[in-house]
Length: 433
View 1 (spheres, rainbow, N blue to C red):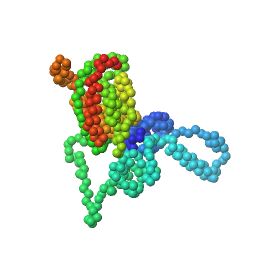
View 2 (cartoon, helix red, strand yellow):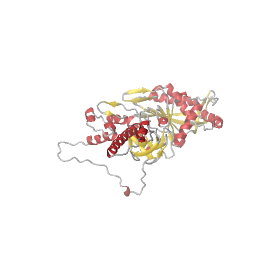
View 3 (tube, one colour):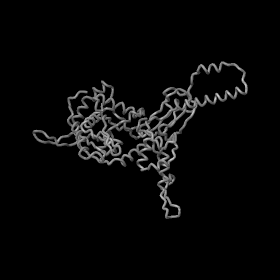
View 4 (spheres, one colour):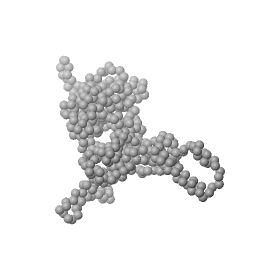
């Protein structure tokens, strides 16, 4: 699932116990904070046990299901079966022992080779055992000391400390009792929502909606958001696209939108200002060598997902357009893989498709910037010429740049967005695609 994924939620079982599963056939659907995806079986066999139920949160490394596979007979097994000696009580007992040993061997084999697990890189710690990235982040965020950590009994695999173990520990630590007061402390609890008191409809958030909500809230808590705005004259691009899009669509069999043009401009600006292509880890800045641009995509249910165009600065405009169309189509049909949404270094979003003239997007962690393209509108504009200035109608849009003020100052944030503007306004109207 990738190094950044610490857990996933089981959203649907696609097979029932007793059903036959083919090799590489999907068994369950899972949701992470990045993407919904199906988990295929690495073996052909029969599903004999479901280890989790729908909506259970599964940590990396845990077994989701067990599949019974058919094993070929060995020569020794054939020889044992070929003996036709009469059975006796002693031989029955011996057979039972052999069966138990075989059962243990089969169980061990299943655990090693026929389990469906979520794989990720987990570093070990001599004192606390395995700690997932999620648990490490919780320990750091809550300032849990080594002594406190050693007092927590892990309930995960191999006594690993899990997310729930940390939450249980924090719930007990947060109850502060004033020892000078002998009476029991009074802990106020928030009033629960009584649905019967309202005539309004109560709608349960989807799993992806809950993940997005948490991701956005954490981003606002983490980064010091600040915005810069700039107006861009895209008349030349608008007219150029109208001229070339029919030929492109007839030749390639795909639509040619403004999105690949905008992403190309961002990729060029990131090469010019590489300190926008970074992430922050504690008090260290990680300069990304690759330019992988995430593309916020709206789904039919109202949620958003951010597939990533890898090495965007190395694609020509045809390749960019094809990548944009492919990722957008697979996002809307729920066919993205975890790798399709991983590794982003910067994100763009097009709020203009919904009619918004500008927006203040929230940074997609752990990145430090996100650019929003507003709607393209006809605007009266002062046009400067050698013969003098005059008022004309131009196609314009506003682009908004949200960036992390912890590491990106106003000068860099403004220069970056100005570079995007300059690239778009100086578009070569004679360019072929």
